Amino acid sequence: MLKTIQRSTPIVLFATLLVVIGIQTTLYANPHQLLFDRDAIKDPGSLIVKSQDARAPVSKLIASQLSEDMQWVLVGYDGASEPSAKLQNALLSDLNQLLEAGPLYDAQLFADIQLSEETQRLVAQNPKSGEALVRLNRLLLSDVYPYELAPLSAEQTDRDFKGIETCRENLRQIKVALDAYRASNADADPRWLSELAPEYLEEEGLLCPADATAGVPGVLTEDASDPTLPCSYLYEMRPAEKTNQEFMQVYEGNLTPIVRCEHHGLNLSLSGKLYRNGPQRDIYNSNKMGVSALADVVRGLRKQHGEAFPKTQEGRERLKQATEELVFKKFAPKLLSAIEKEAFSQLEAQLGKDMLKTPMGMDILKQVIPQVENQIRKQLQRQLEAQLGTEFFTTEEGKDILQQLSVLTLPDGTNQMK
Image 1 (spheres, rainbow, N blue to C red):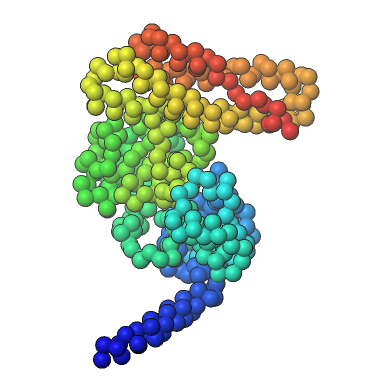
Image 2 (cartoon, rainbow, N blue to C red; image 1 turned 180 degrees about the horizontal axis):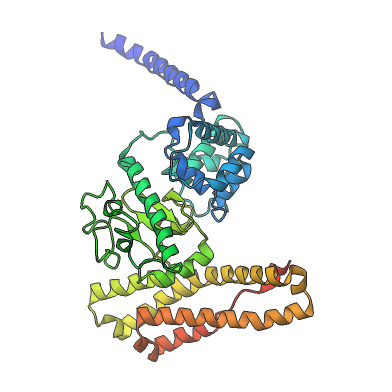
């Protein structure tokens, strides 16, 4: 009996192997079986909004390849309401055409995206057509839009969607209330979302249905809890952050979030668009950049080492290092580049592009640019003094920071005139 089993084992294993191969062939021989279906598009509204974001490399590529009908949709859709069935079908068709059109992967385009192990494996194989290419393209898009598109092998879950439609409506109402508040207050933003209630917004609109704490203290950080009413939402224009956000909007554009729901990873942007978090841009997940990020470093050092630590030699050195890294290396270059573009755009609108190339135009630039640079340096210095304290700038470390600040200049503007 034992010999019979031993003789039959290779046959059984071979038969099993054939079955597995047959299953794999059935599943993957046809690339069409890897295309998106309606269930695979988890959040079509957010995907459409992100496709409007020309500052996000992959979204910009996708938007350029969408059909003319979808291009028109991108202009007006705000993500607050569920896209119609017709619109979702059009999106589905465009996405699937994109999967089959050719290779999506470009090392520079996906440089800041964390790719899954399966995606990396297929990238290394560099497929040019067929099932492998469609599979790779779908995996790439799922890595770029994890909230919006389901991966191939993961089980579907509604964990991130519990109560999200109510939350979307809350954020939509907050946007309406913000607009009404600004209209009645000389275009000024409220200091806190609670200032919208009850005149512009019902108090219930400040509570996310997924917030088990009912807004007290919710998901907010220590400097973000609304002082007047329970509030589930993170308001990015609060007093401690307002100046930093105004800087950020210059180079991050109108998709910069002003209100966030951390429970659903849902953001309300300056332009009133609603979209989910994601890996393409830092602002999708956090507005903590530049001086705002530096403030977190200061708080962290005090919490870990005591209130007096930032005044010690080691503390000052740590603050100098953080300022150089977060403000001068990461924040300032983007800010200066964006302001340079804005300055040239305004001058072009007033004088004309050809005029800027004339000796008179160049003379105007020589007068305007230093003034802009000086304003930027003064504003950054005020922000740094607010976070680090004026006493810091009397020390050697502080003086060195001021010296670095004094040489901040706009990029060479010759590219702007081409």
